[in-house]
Length: 518
Image (cartoon, rainbow, N blue to C red; front, top):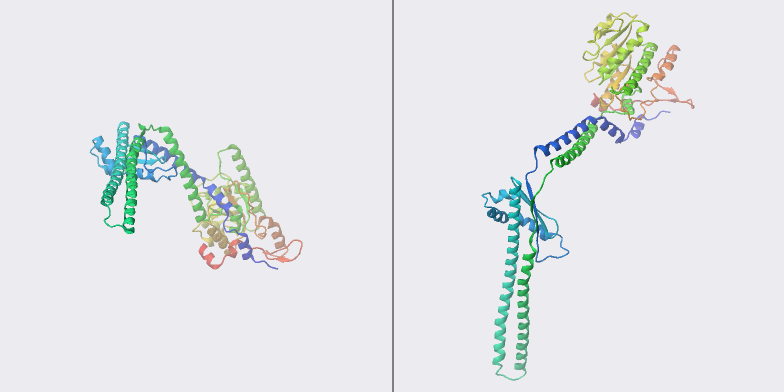
């Protein structure tokens, strides 16, 4: 019974791998750390190089005739807008005897409503004294303008009420005259007419009294508004602390830089699609991760740990090369220097068995530029490899970076170990490498992962890749000795039924995606 590898891969692959994103962003900590540091320095520099201008502040208590306890701040917002008019600015400049234009002066101050009746005025100037004088002039101009508007409003209201009272008095005089003259006729109709005149006189008298009282109340309310509108906090200069401003700006810059750096790192990670986790690299290459080498570190205990890991890797590769009847190559992706060091250490481990020759196909002078050591391995280029004798043990070192001559890789070795730097190649390129090696008939023994994430706990083993894994070497050799050849299918344990192995991820890609990867 066979299984559908495409359906299995689609079901097991998540749409968005948060763990891979977190690991990739953490690996780009140099980027977001540098941006956070740049934001910190920029914030501190702004505070030092661009200090705030001298500033003065004053507070004005503003009384309104229509004040209500449930006011939502509409009146004080109106006062703020009135403060920012050319009329107030012109009056303040006139009291300062300044030739500055009101439009220019309006850019140097602002108002803010602290409560429903408290207005704060903030003014800047060339010096503390000038800023304080400007604040005082603005406060006085605003108070004078507010009082004048309240008085004008009260006078207009009082005048309108008095005019209405006077019109009522004229009408009352006419009614009294009509009552005094009486009606020449007698009878029920004349009596009803006199009653209506008396009722009208009573109504007019009441309304005249009411208008008089309202006019008096309008005039009485103005002194309360005038007395209630005053400067409650004298203008004073604001003292700026340079260390405090620098620390505040630096903290803001640090946070902004860190957020921007994390965002750039996250977006770059998603767009680049460069696998970092072991399971992703193994799945995209179709080969298991057989060893890891952490990046170099200046800490002594970590150097010892890296040295021990390198020795284990060399021993494992030497055992593989000795036990293989076919030549083995090392192919690097994003780590030419590490691959050259591994090749040299591998050659030193194989030296006791006889002369060792390294076929160098790496870009640059990682191997060819080194100074040869007495008794050390011989490094030759690919064109000189044909002149070597068959009695010498040799292995090739090449690259699978973009621009690789794929047809030349089989001359470096018919089997290969990939040396890949985590997070270097994109998923599409890893698919391309796996497909090209398969087309050339070069099985991948395993992957040596350079600079893995130290917090990665994923499994980099392909459990159904026995035909290429190191743990399947002995079984393949036994089958080859028995004449069975190399099989790409293994029997299921326990049931004894044949099972088709799961193909690597690149094998399930269609022609369109493969063309895209190429």
